Length: 348
Image (cartoon, rainbow, N blue to C red):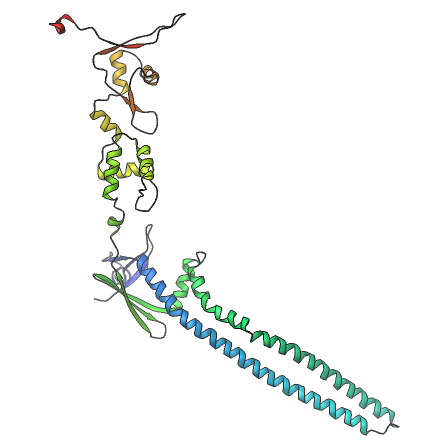
């Protein structure tokens, strides 16, 4: 079934949707095609078609200029010959007059001088125009005219050209485009004037497949999370040369997104499975504040592991160990971790 499509814009990529359903019946979209590959194919076809036509137009323009210059040269030569004849006629009239008739002689002499001045002016203008016409027909001018055939591809590919302007150029050259969605996308283009062209492109890969993270990246991230925080894992992935589907480097936010999508355990859950405990539990056991636990962790008395990119951490279990609190004064004594004495029942 041949279906007319209408192009729309989304936040991800342009799409072509079925015009029959959307425009005529105001219904939901029955089918759609991602338009990025179609736009590229149409652009290539347009540049390939317009370039030879532009070259033919440029050559026709050069020939037209040459013809107009030749016709103008003939007109100027005719005008110059007529002015030269009038000046010669004025000279003859002056030579035939009776010298004693000074009034007539002076009038004919002034007319002769005016004709000579007009002839001189016309000759100078003729030479100047001839020099300018030679510039129009020079090889440099021909090269500039032939360069006009490259203007359309340059303007079309210029990133400063707005999409609206490209649509206007497209509307001036193409009547309509018909798409057939099958194993491949068939594109039938009808140009203004009746010429038709058909081409086909591979069917676009579904966006879900394009955005899917590669299996080796997921496996590497799962392995890195055993010993790395999210940011550390992102730095390690970037160092290994991995990128996301947009070919962008990883960061903590992207790592968290991949973890959630593939249900990978984070660093905190992995530490909890290994027996690490929060600072709140240790504070209750030793009867101190959470700040004291963190202070003991910073001093190295308690072993801890960070599980995010800030200062949050979990502590390694101490078993039956106890902490003997330190004391200040002249002879300060730091807290130390000691083994708890076993009771008689435990000994028995």
